[in-house]
Length: 144
Image (cartoon, rainbow, N blue to C red; front, top):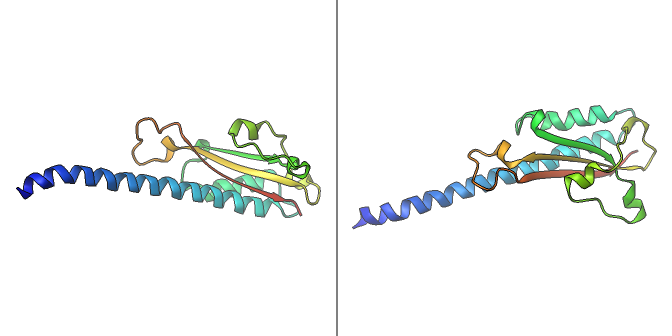
């Protein structure tokens, strides 16, 4: 009797554990994207740092997550927040913002750093229907 119970319960239990592991991994990737963007924005806010320096810092932090060619990284001017507008939530909306060179940014000028990766590029096993979902992290700060 107990063998039959185990035969029915074990696959459901293992599937549940697998989903918890996948969700935990995706959440870890999201936290790493956010941390890399915050760290790169903190570096980019200082004088003498170029946009390329800040981008390389973010990609360096994210190297354990995914190869650099799988990470979409944006460094954009976020001056619209001074006018009371909100930052676009989509990648296309953010990519339409104007580029910024951090070494030439004005004091107190806000800028955005956003990193995005496809779930299918970082998952252990890609679940059907989830491969094209995006995991996003971003940070907005002002130049010093």
